[in-house]
Each structure stands twice: as C-alpha cells, then as structure tokens.
Image (tube, rainbow, N blue to C red; front, top):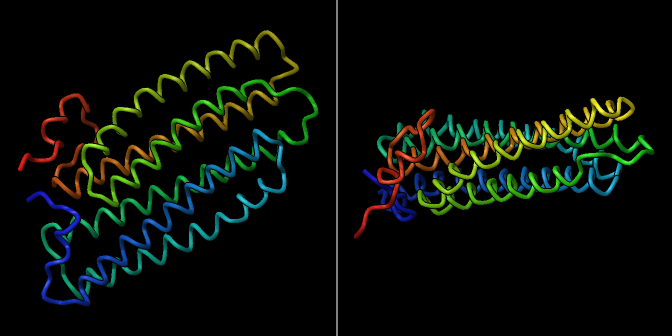
Length: 242
C-alpha cells in the first residue's frame, strides 16, 4: 500500500502517532544539521576560513550523538509498538536515513580537515571552481532528498536519483583534469591531492543523498530500488493518479 503524509495520523493510540511524528521531526533536525555542516565545510574551504573549518570538524560529534538518540527512539518504537506495514517501513527508513546522514557528516568533517590543510598553503589552489560547482549540485540533492522524505514525495526522490548520475560524471571529469594538472606541475601535487579528497567527499555526499531518496521510495511504495537502473523505475515510483 502506498502512503501519504496523512497515513500516520489514523492510529487509535495518540501516543503512537506522536512517537512516529517525533521520529520524522528528529530526522529532519539531523538532516538540517548535516546540511549546514556540508555548507560550512565548503565555505570554509573556498574562503580559506580555518576557524569555521575547525568548528565543522568539532561539531561532527553532535551529529553522531543525534544519530544514536534517533536509533534509540526507533528501537523503543519497534519493541513497544511492534509496527507493521507502512509504520514499520517508516521506522526502518528512518534508521537507514540516519546512517546516511551520519556518513554525510563524516564527509563534511573530511572536507573541513582538508580545508585546514589547504589554509596553510600560500600558493594558489587549483580545483576550487570544480569544488564550488559539484558542491552546489550535491547540496541541492541533499536538500531535495530531505524535502522528499518530509513530504513522502517519490517524484522529487526520483529526480535526486537521476541527478546522482550527472554528479558522478562531473566528478570523473574534474578528477581527470586535476590528474593532468598534477602531471604538468609536480609542485602542485600536495594541494591538488587535498582538492581531490574534497571532491571525493562531495561525490560521496551525493551518493548518500541518493540513498536517502531511495529510502523515500521504499517508505512510500514498499519498493527497494537499490542497484536498479533509475530509467526503469519512473512508472513504478510515480505517485498514483487519483
């Protein structure tokens, strides 16, 4: 059975309704925190702001703590309520989503650490244009996947899934360009390697945003679309016409 944003308001137990809503609310709070971490990490790199980079690195623990809190809440709901059907899918989707958000937080921390390394480099850093461009794409993917989760919007979720292939192509192109630059100028190897690690982290953010979008499709449709060509899924994942 497909679900909508109103499906989880029909339980006899008002407390159960509240527990499910709190899971969603806390997940969205974690998503907002992680989104800010990625934004600040990229800004710190592009603007050479070492203080902000240190803040992002140090805030990673808060993301980890929130994941553990939400996992505990999910465990209690599973044990006390023994949810079924769409309610069970919601709890499982939240557990999976918090894992991806925690890993996005880890990638933001990696970007911040590389920003600190690059802040000690007085030379012009190659690859910042690519970082800015790819970061805009993956941050939009993350924002859209969180919106899709909040609204149970499979159409928006599938847009994120399709966008991931585009980001992968941009990432590959940027890496080839930087490899060529390193071969032409050996003095740039250290700084370019740091940028390549940043690009890799951003590409992984896109992958985890894609995972979040897949969780939305699972939540709403009960379909596991991992490892499946997105072009074959549009009809299945599309919302039903009323």
